[in-house]
Image (tube, rainbow, N blue to C red):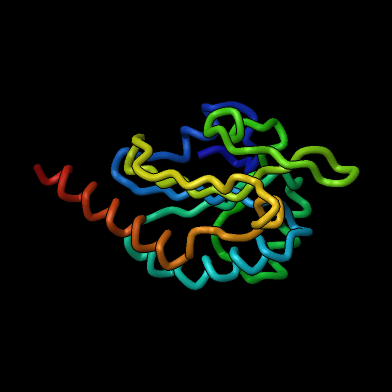
Length: 161
């Protein structure tokens, strides 16, 4: 795995996937979003169990590494954050872009689960007025954990065959 948390190419993204592991990517708008901060904190509660099962979890936003490090520290989050200023994740996964006042586009919330190199689950928030432009109505963190653990069990069964 590269030393950098910056996604510059699809290869940077793919190198985080391993054939024998489930990987979860969660996109979030940025350090300024109160809904994102709350969601990441709730995911942290599930992370220990996921990690014990060999499941990797990554947060992905377009915030620079300095902002992400400050957010991780503030929230007490132990899973890794990836910086996607090059919009690699957006391009690869079709994550919607919103507009932030003065700061350009930002990633909408999404969850992507990979079993090995195969994407087995995708949820992307579509911006609408009723969900405050994509900030609310995320898939529950417990549901993300359930689906990741289910993918891990299916991967283990597939490998045993």
